[in-house]
View (spheres, rainbow, N blue to C red):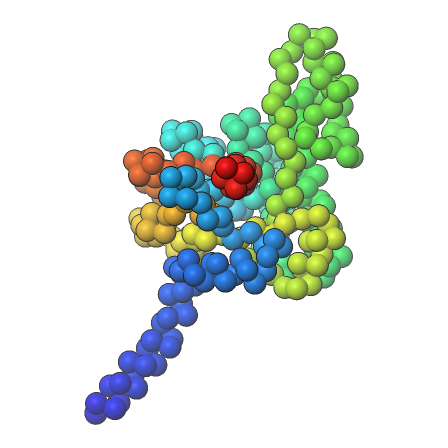
Length: 281
């Protein structure tokens, strides 16, 4: 009987431990991932304890829930990187522009909510290109009038001297000039060596994260909020999802508590800037 009990315990540990490490990956595992895949894949940064900054990323944007998410972010002065699914943009172009005007960041999540690893290189490249057009348009028209024309094919920081001159002639204020980023998050979060090679060819960087409550599947906001708060550490990257009714109450719990603990929720670009500043000290 004792041997049977021990065997059952061993089996339970063998089955449960991998699941637990997926749900709450330890820092050592994150460091291994970062070493294993190098600069190709961004999992998180490791910042000093005095730099309480985490990147907040929101997948599957835009949706009918996006305006409420923006209000929740504004209430806490938080900023986020929204990963855009291209097929969800038609009819919601104004929502993307509102995200940009609120000081948030847009990044590429492909055209459809599907496992990107299963796509051919040609299809994946096409999806990224088509989604990027929506992103470029959102940035451009958030800061330009139709008189400025469409965004140029080589849009860099979503501005141009000619457009700036036309705005000045109209007496219009100069807009911010957000930097164009190269972030790509694969659908379902899985990648392969083939995908990494393609991303290098396209000048893209795969971005995953270190704090993921699996909120795409778990619809209990309090469970997801507790998970995020339990995993906070300087330099972490939070993954959560638009297009779910439970995201707003989760953020309404998480963001004020982060503030109380002295943390700032920022975009990926802001997090990387923070990391560069720390490295330069």
